[in-house]
Amino acid sequence: MSFSGQSPKNNGEKERCGIIGSVDEYFINMDERLLKPYSPKETENRIYKLWNDSGFFNPTQ
View 1 (cartoon, rainbow, N blue to C red):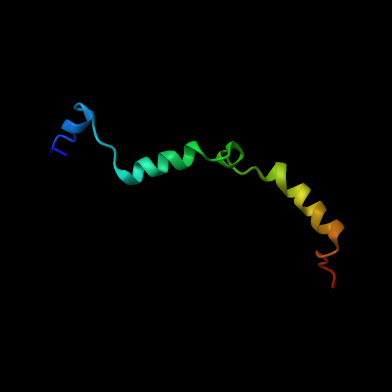
View 2: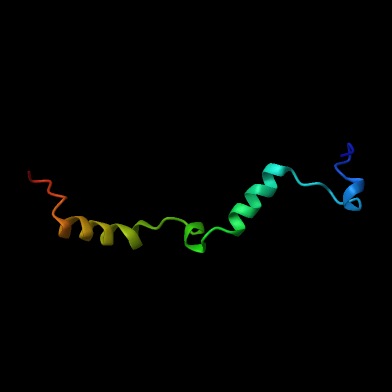
């Protein structure tokens, strides 16, 4: 790689850092559901009901 960040091997295109390339591939292959932000409103009530119905969550004991 030259100091300009361009590589004669890649027809003058800038080389990509190996780490960044790996991260890009990771996100490209990631399930779309994992990319959206966590929304407590969509999740907490459902999880609380599962805990309550299972009998494992018993704060009175």
